[in-house]
Amino acid sequence: MFHKFFLYLKNFDWILFLSVLLLICFGLAAIYSVALGQGAIDLLNFKKQIFFVIIGLLLLFCLAFLDYHLLRNYSNYFFILAVILLLGVLVFGQTIHGTKGWFNIGSFGLQPIEFVKFVLILFLARYFSSVSIKTNPLKHILLTGSGLSIFLVLVLAQPDFGSGLILFLFWLAMITLIGLNKRYLLSMVLIIVAIIAGTWLFFFKDYQKERIITFLNPSFSDSLDQSYNISQAIIAVGSGRLTGRGIGFGSQSQLKFLPEAQTDFIFAVIAEESGFIGVCLVISFFAIFFYRCIHHLKKINNDFGIFFILSATCLLFIEMFINIGMNIGVLPVVGTSLPFLSYGGSAMISSLMLVGVAESIIIRSKINY
Image (cartoon, rainbow, N blue to C red; front, top):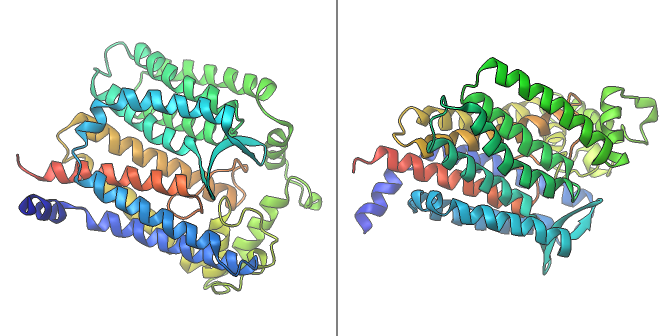
């Protein structure tokens, strides 16, 4: 037993893990700084985040040492559980910022959509690993799209446009990466345009439409209206310059000009307080993480393992890209967190669970059975 344990530790990708740990440290520093600026003497959110990190890391190592084939075998049950959670949150959930997407558990909140992302990765990885992609690609689009649609309808009903967009872009990226014929891709583009038009007309709330209109036609003279978030984030990023203002000395975050500083706009906090150097370090740690994931793909001899790591990498990259993009004003504000850095227990635990399963796949790809 101990021999197997040390064998797993030996084949554990510590570089990948270290990159994630350093990102978490940056996030904790930013959350601590924002808590000081908000006058939170008890540092409740900072303490909560440490608790979430500890739980997430424990699950990471448990999943790393667990045979990932068990997750594949029970992926259908996870899918059903995810649907039940999304239905449950519509009935019993708490509404925050106009979105009914959280369960209250004591002083903590559980956001089911973060675990739905994990389940969707399991679903797609199992499906793509059990079929021939080149045979009847339209069937694969329809079947995986049907599974996605169940989640999308329930997520948009909350309404949570940001999470719905993440799920859709993730599915679209995976469909593209598996190598579809151009005519199928063209057909999908036309369908997407129709879906966007329908979503705009029937699902989007007024504030969501205003966010997109603000992005397409920004007016900084109207900085107290919908462009306020974007303008304050850009000011925060620019004011950091080379070395930053220092932890706890960022004017935008400390004086409460920057909204949602611990979640959606934590990148702006990091840019303001640690400057260009801190931003480069964060992006470098993300780059190392993504490189290590992709590096292992060619060494994995299991299709499910390949698709799982590819899917997890794709999802986390999309979340990172959108979050940083909206922090620097090149993408509209859609309310998505920055993986491993933003405050939030559900997102942190779910992301670390993805890393744990990826480590399990990497470990077992190195061991000669």
